[in-house]
Length: 149
Image (cartoon, rainbow, N blue to C red; front, side, top):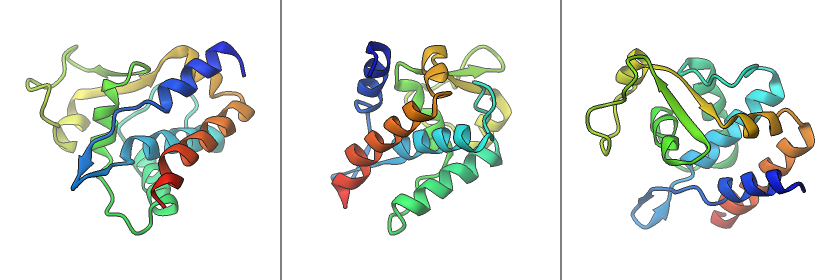
């Protein structure tokens, strides 16, 4: 594993997760799995993650596959809250995000105000390699999903 791959693996395995009733949410790891699946399937062709139904379906598919008995966190929450991670950024149409940074904006607000989200260019480049995608996918599943089952 290259130093850069190792760096991003560590970043991915260190994402901040919310908790509810003392249980960690896997919404952000599942969203990352959806991004990886989108690259695998050729649905995500460029590093512009649009707030749209295609990405929502990928996310819901990961939720259904890996946590079928868990109430699904709505897609807009991990899409927005990933911005707290060093490798993810949201490009706002107006140049600024919601007024209250600590409050999760609604799906409607995101649809109307987000141009797109993106990963670091270096991480996006790494995800173009099927072997690295598989390594990241396995690491996410082992670290976040399997430990809860």
